[in-house]
Length: 619
Ligand code: F6R
Image (cartoon, helix red, strand yellow):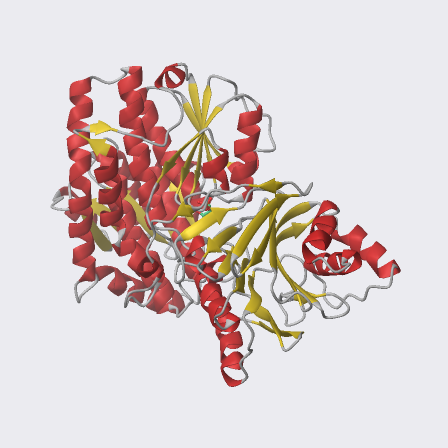
């Protein structure tokens, strides 16, 4: 939700800010803006719409200066417009602020500032921050920012500049992410690491209620009481090329194709002589032995990974498990205690509801474990233990490789905990471990088929579009799965709706007779996950029932399945034969690609779907 960047150094601030915003655009893209200190004043350009619009404008009239801040917005307070776009200025136009977060008490602040004579131009909560800093400014920007922040309730990551302090860039955070990029004779502020990767791999993760004063050759962090804190500089492992499309038309396609390698990387790192190693897991084995139940908490795609995790953990580690969406968990009275392991799954590690759920679980005495992709993110830092997925930066808003990476971690965690609980014989666990290590090769073989000139999923997508218009836009999708592939039905539906805006619902196939079968006529396309598994026959019955009512079926089936040929399935998608436990890693790939190609057929912006932002750092 919104991306911010700040730069101080010797380069042209505009170049750094625009490049950084390009890498942060996944966080929000309804407007973008930049402010620089140039020629003793603040110069500001901000535009509604995608970053490209701002870039085009600055190409014809560029800004100078080597101190600047920038913002890419996902609107919360006030519609997307030039006026509501950031940066926001104070009345005098001397101070510029960019902000990610929500000032919850902005109305009260705005009213009292208005009474004091401040003139507001926008409808945003952020503008109150600029006016508050103006109110407190007596020649020291850092001091004024600290005074202003003490009055603010809510979440913020901010970057602030003042025209009279051309050697100073101020940043601060509370519940929204902010990192410092430490360069040589230059320093950076950004919402996320990829924004600074072109210039430095040295970063400092700012904590809540910390304020940083940057000059081009110094970094000083204080807390809100003014005490200086000493921060560790971390070196990021990500490479800048990972944050680029590398010739692919979309990040989403690149990330789908990376999945075999991502899972391989995870297994190579974690499996040492067939034993699972979790170096960063700071929870002792003796504590894990005391665990009586597991609560998995997450949002969206990560929630679906959690649902799959429950199937494996209960089956092989035999620990009772339940899965909650973070927004529900945090507001009910969850049965969490010191014998509970709360696993928070989050690609970004910054999702507001998941972070709040983690805190809630901690408060109730649970041991907490984060499964995160972004190193140093809030959930990773606040959980008792963390397992990183190390999937590299995921840029497309629709999550793909983070999902399979999370599944891979759940497989490993299951093997790890099953050894501790002794619920499954070691010989069986050894067999499963060996099967798991084969999966990256099988995933890559499947991906290679889709990379070929003729892509069956692209053909099905084209066919669907034709049908959709024939049916006067009445067609839509249902996804049915059972057992460990039921969460994949939810995930397939989520992928389709978020990037193609076509209605799609995921269901456990066994629930069809309890309602959804009423939907079946010639309109919906029903994706049935019917791979060889213990519920295969049940799924065949579901398919028959759908066909009997005129439904159109896309079957996701096991390669070489002869029986399925008798079912008159309209469109077949084959996946290689594998152990049922690991089939979710394969099944999801064509589902992701189907969503991708449908969105492509309809001509939508695949990497930046409407209304969404990748990192949901507000509630
Ligand atoms: C879907 C998607 C979202 C995220 C969800 C959680 O494609 O990307 O549903 O999965 O917002 O985000 P994280 O994993 O960052 O907590």
